[in-house]
Image (cartoon, rainbow, N blue to C red; front, side, top):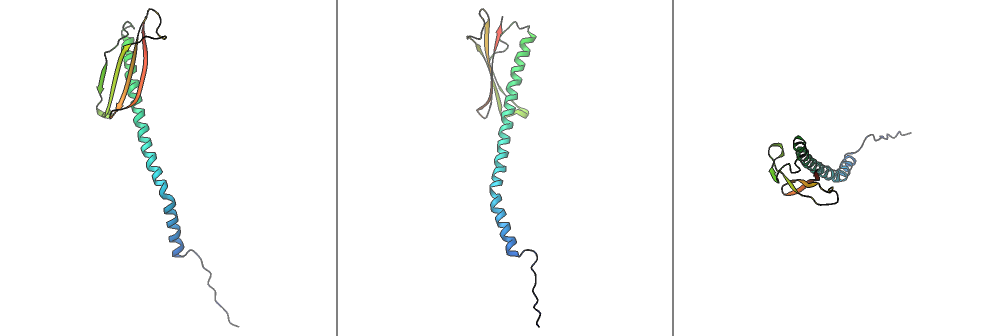
Length: 135
């Protein structure tokens, strides 16, 4: 009786490993694009958040100046355009104060509409508009 020797294959062949690597590479290529897009989106979100905080800081400053004056003067500052420096280089902040005439202004009161807009590279990123009332 002749005894045949059969070898049992264990593991993967080189061709199978190369095929799996190619399939994984092709399938993961779109994921790298998503990571890049997510990074750009986070940077844009951070820029908008910074602009919003800069606008809010200016509005709070105007309110503090007005409070320190005893609320006697509705016009706390003239119109102002600031080119920011340091950590905020590239941002500009425009403050506009104009008379406000509208239903929200009580009779006999002097109202001013204050607009604080923050731009980066000429693009408006954030704006805060509020009304100051002088009784």
